[in-house]
Image (cartoon, rainbow, N blue to C red; front, side, top):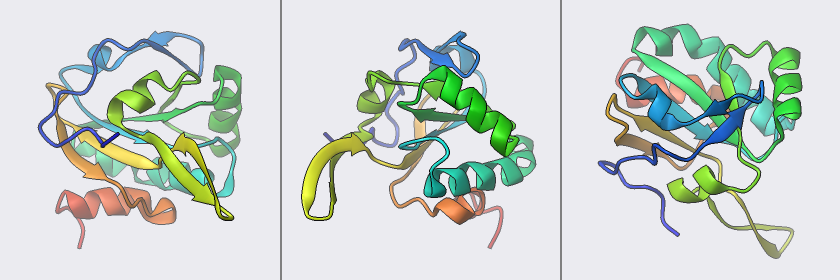
Length: 157
């Protein structure tokens, strides 16, 4: 499956749970720009670096009008622990059935140690106020992800 393309409308009606167990959907965020980033597992080294980079760059991204949503297969309780442990300042959404992940095309074949398997593909999508994809980042730089996004938007060199 291919990634959701630039100009495509992101799925607005897939309902997931956030870290607090509340029902959430991208439709609820219509009217604001959103960074939706997909990551494999909370509290793993690369995912922690990525989340902390976004935490540290949050003010700059918010000043540009963006909300941030992280999506993983983790259960809400794991997300709460991740948020508390890393002092994250944005919501994380639980997608154990890969509904939103697959709709964005961020679920696919991966390989490790010569074995292939299906898994979450670390990918970030930027959405405009209407929920349309404006940017897709397939090669995420976990430790510098906020600046990677800011460079893409032309804000930092």
